[in-house]
Structure formats: structure tokens, C-alpha cells
Image (cartoon, rainbow, N blue to C red):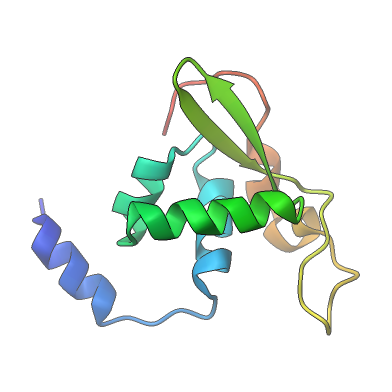
Length: 111
């Protein structure tokens, strides 16, 4: 198994087609009921950065929040529009396909 340092080095040497907003959104779609700490660790972002990104996505209706015990869990809103001026008519559910439909707003085992 790779160490955290090896993982972060590998992540730093790669680039993505999306911003941190898109990366967080796709990760939430792929791993329903992700927590802020889990997102930060998986995406090599700071918890503060993830928290701000989640706040912005939530304000724009891109994700919904479910409180389970003491933790917030996040799910993609498949009916929300994709926020890009050239394709703002596309719904997140259409763009993310089956990933967006993986999340139901009920408590489930975390991935």
C-alpha cells in the first residue's frame, strides 16, 4: 500500500480537466455519503478548502446535505444544472450518468 506522501506526490504530478469544485462534485457522486474529512484526504485538499467548496456547491443547489449523527454527508443533486455558460442546459444527472443516481438521502454504509 502506498504511503500518504507517495499518494500526494503522485497527485501533485497529475492534472485534471476540472477545478476543485468539479473534482469534489465528481467524488461525491462516486462515493455517496462522503464526509468533509474523507473528501479532503481522498482529493489531497485541505479540509478548509473542501468546506468552502462544499458551501459553494450547496448554495448553488449542486449538492444536498444529510446529517447523520454528528457528521454531514453529501449527495449530488442530479436535477441541478451543470454550471458552465456553454452547456448550462445540461443536468448534472445527465452529465454524471449512473454516478449521480447512486446516492439516496438515507443512511447507508460509507464507501
